Amino acid sequence: MIKNMSKYINIKNISLTSLILTTAVFNIVIAAAPIEPIIQTPEYIVESSSLAAQSLIEQGYRKIVKAPITGYSSTPDQTDDTPLITASNTFVRDGVIASNFLPFGTKVRIPELFGDKVFVVEDRMHERFSDRIDIWFPDRESAKQFGLRKATVQIF
Image (cartoon, rainbow, N blue to C red; front, top):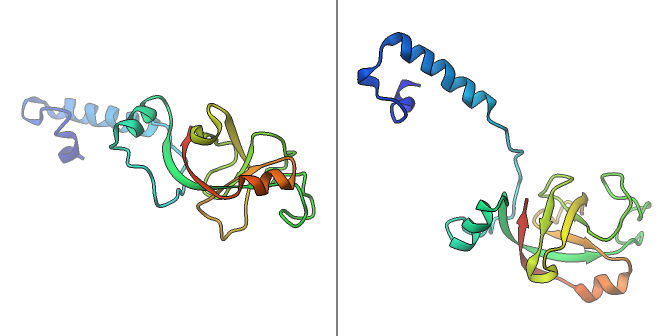
């Protein structure tokens, strides 16, 4: 602990009492830090060192990923026997997406395809699609017309 704290405090000019007090305060600060949920993301994360990604992260986005995006509709052959109910037990509607690598309730934007529209993860996909986002469409034809695309996804 002292070795790690040496970059924050000057060890040479500090008394033992002050060091113990500083260590206790330092531990409280670490314990009080919010814990981010662990998100499994596709392996091709856009480098956060790029200026564009860094700018988005500074604006409050947690991650920027490049992911395959598909469409689905509410038909039993594309879902289960309750096609209008999502895996999070809500009704399908415009703005709902399915994703296995993001927790329920996560909000995302896909500006290349949908501008500033915000989508919310409320559904899941078959387990073989661990790196994909599936957007709900009101009819099968719209989902088929959307097809498979790759785009940058802003996760916040």
